[in-house]
Each structure stands twice: as C-alpha cells, then as structure tokens.
Length: 133
Length: 108
Image (tube, rainbow over all chains, first blue to last red; front, side):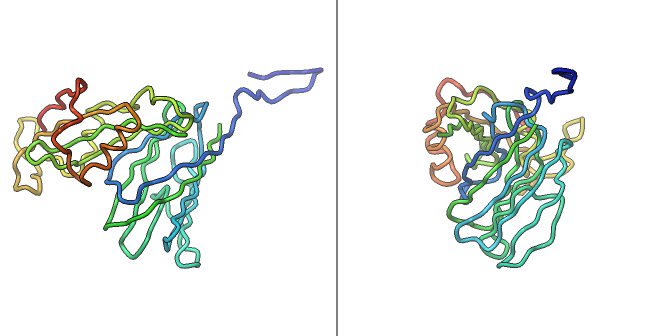
C-alpha cells in the first residue's frame, strides 16, 4: 500500500520490519529440522552468523526471498573460506566434525532449517539471526 | 527466553531416533504449531526405504532391505521437549513420552 503525506510518498512501515535475535545449537544434537518462530512478522529474508566457542569454523550467510542462500563465507582457522550456496550455518569443531544447517524455508513468523550432524561435535553453537521483511 | 516443542521420529524395531523436528519460539510462548505435516517430516528421514507404487522396495535400508516402520512422539512442553532430546543420547527411554499424543505415523 502506498501512503502519501502532504503529497510525499511515504514508506509503508507496517510492511517493513527487521529483528535481531539469538539462539544456540546443541552440537551433540542429531540431525533434524528446527523451526525458529516468534519473529513477530513473516520474514522474507535473513542473515545469520554462526560461531562456536572452540570451533575452527564459523559462518555468515544471507538467505534471500527465494530461500536461496546468496552466499556463505566460512572462517577456517582465521582464513576466509570459500563461499557456497548450500550451507546456511556451518559450525565445525575439527575436520569432518560439524553441524551444518541447510534447506531454509520460510514459515509463518520464522524459518525452518535442516540440521545435519557429521562426526561427534560437542559444546554449543551460537547463532545470531537478522530477520527482515 | 525461548521455548521448544519437539517431534521425535523413531524406528519401531529398535527405538532408534532417526529424525527430530524442533520448534523454537524466540519470545517464550508455547510454540503453537508445527509448520510441517507428519508426512513431510517422514520424507526427510535419511534411511527411509523408498518403495515402488506396488510396495516393492526400490532402495533398501541399512538394516538389509527390511521395510521399517516408524512412529513418533510429540512433546509441546519446553522442558519435557528438552528432556526428550537429551534422553539417552539417541534412544527413547521406556517410551515415556507417549502420553496421549501418540499417533501412528504409518508403516514406511
């Protein structure tokens, strides 16, 4: 909806929104879906950074309104790893020991990610989402 | 404080957990819904045998091609959901979560 005030086009603030929120991933958790809800609006895009306190890798990703992963950059022992279009979050604690989230899908008030565990990671992963509409 | 609800899918032959679907609510409400159906969750199970339309096996399971049956439990209370996820690492203990919410997920 276009709103005019004194002849000037205004942004429909109700349709635009953003929220930053944090959560954790139990690194020992098995594979499965996690639906993150309660954002307060229906997001159409998000960015998420993922870090592990003792990990060798973290990641930062951007998911667009087509649920496509625009790019993922993973840190690898201090060096910037290659981007990819598959992983939304990549929490690696050692070689081939990783929790990774893929296949984002937007739901009412949030997003669903599919987590896969490889090897036997331990500890806690930290996630910071920035949801946007 | 975030809250959780969880569905845990397990293989009936050995109670091994094969898939979970957790709903996390950022604002502390009891998660009101699961955004996927049971069938959609079942489709995610990695070792689910794939069948032809006549029921014959296209691709067997790691247990030797036996058609496995799956079932699930669902827990909408946050603490009990976390307890379920923590229980015995990868097994359902005494199926203690089957309290009034158990429904058959059907043979696959």
